[in-house]
Image (spheres, one colour):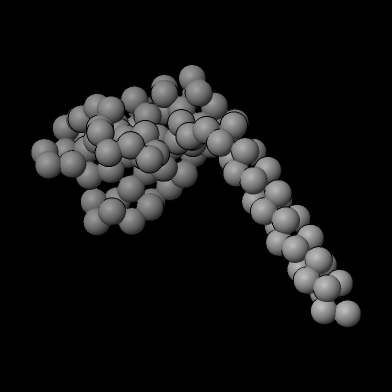
Length: 96
């Protein structure tokens, strides 16, 4: 009796490992997104790709930063996420 419990637990563990492996493969194929964030910056506003530490471009005015982010998002069929000066999200525009 204990032997069958042990083998069924092995099967359960093995099936969970296989499921995790295939899920991670699907996520890696998807890759990073091209969503563009318009965020406050030292002397104005910046456009930054989601997940990047580096800034794509800087602008004195928020509307010019939004226009730049929109161009990039349209090109890559992504979203523009516009932040307020305090960092909270103000708006999201999708270009799917």
